[in-house]
Image (cartoon, rainbow over the protein chains, first blue to last red):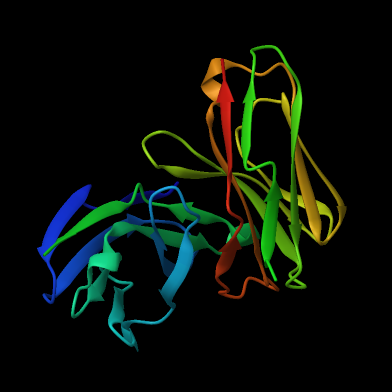
Length: 110
Length: 115
């Protein structure tokens, strides 16, 4: 089966850096994805990791350690518009299944 | 141009009714999905089709029946609606071939409220 854990909620200050962690247990791992979801909107893709290491995309970076079943999303220079839920999703090798964590609600304060 | 579109955006109906939600993607993707997001924001996969063939059918009541007339469309029909069916239903698509790691693109969601 699949088990994905993320913190429920985090608060950070505008301009700061925040790290959102995700741990997972899965069979047939084929990639870890991060999505952003603003309230009342659809999830939108942020980044993904298939191999160990850090992937950087502008203000967002994502890290993966497959041996530890661990990933994090790093958001730099936080802006108010970054207030949203961040969903960690693991892709299983069989039949292209995606399993989502329950999401981390990030509150950015002025 | 909307990549993944769903209709309707809102659906309010009574228990026992039958309703359908439609989804279309113009990205040329091979795979489409239906997800249910409950009040706790947990996104759970329901079904997936690859080139009109059902490949994922999670533990979903058989009151839910997906249908894919072609690879750009995936509809969801729900019979005998129950209060617990109230949720946001998201359609998504991805360019999945041979287990490659491709991201999903989500539609705007359909907020279903059963009274």
